[in-house]
Length: 468
Image 1 (cartoon, rainbow, N blue to C red):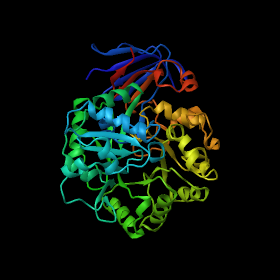
Image 2 (tube, rainbow, N blue to C red; image 1 turned 90 degrees about the vertical axis):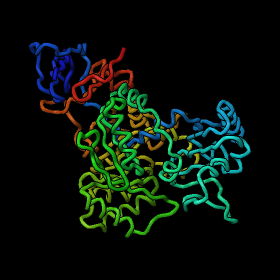
Image 3 (cartoon, one colour; image 1 turned 120 degrees about the vertical axis):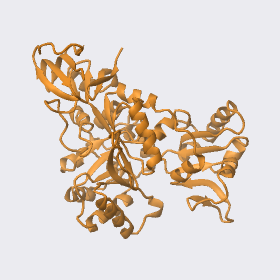
Image 4 (spheres, rainbow, N blue to C red; image 1 turned 45 degrees about the vertical axis):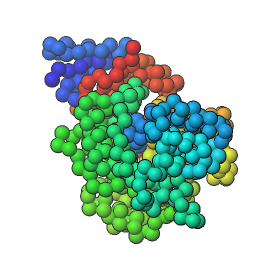
């Protein structure tokens, strides 16, 4: 296997260094390294920093790819605007073709159910996802195509008629629709352009079929990043390690909290499979249930156990997170993207509890960052800016005491797959050659926190993105 030499790079604060990559590892670091074997490629860093590649520790790849062929509703101004956009979208598609829209929120777009969608789009099967990803709303034509044996996830009115609202019905919808998987190449390319070399797909619905789709994309290079998959049940890594298996995902809704023994049973299942636990906890109630479950489960929490999102963490929960040894994998970009809505809807006394960062770190709770795409932006640098500034789109502050400095914001993306909030990976001998080359020394990149600073992205010692 031919290697790669990166010349004149800044490595961990030292400028003018060369770095040789061979067999997927960092093989040599020094000044003016001798030329290697014939066929070895070279890249001139021009003084830019070479840092470990970023890992997005919580993403939903298939849903992110599907969003590219969906109508985005995040910025609609009201019910009339939603109706106009949806009507225009369906009019450009043949009658009978499925239509998918995402990002609806009742506060901005008004209430939505089967009847409302029927009036807007009577000739197409339509499904609209809310901003959290927990709810789908379908019109009558869409419901008719799914058959009569509807599951309990389908909400019904007082007369027993389906309202079109389906809570946490992704797996059932996917099985009924049986549609071809969306193209993943644009997602892999966009992430590579931002310096991302690793992805943890956090979908609870991942099964053998969807894992095979993602593995195929990894083998084909459509997803050039190293890939780790969560699931809500059994999952085995393929012999070629196209992906590794991550924590067992536990997801439930604040609307219908399960008995504690059900949650501890899930933890026991994870332990029997030799897997850590990743618990979806957006609300304070969800977090309270998970903390109690970890406290009662045999063996308590273990290294690698994670709280996903940590959307609301009350001060008294911080000590419990520390005591139990749990990591919080959060999404600081939501402070920017949804912050104005939070300021309008969340009690001012609870707003400091939203998507905490600095207070967790100060208490010794490991924290990692992620996108939660498609529900948040793919851009990790935008999330870093949000973690530093703690401002909404309008410039209003949200929990300014939770702000971190730019260096720490970057480190939130540098933990290992198995220890996302742990010590940052290093550019060091023998380490994996999953790297991000910046156009400037690190200090300059931290001053801007912009994806435009990425000059090249390297996975397994191979350049998968080079800026023009």
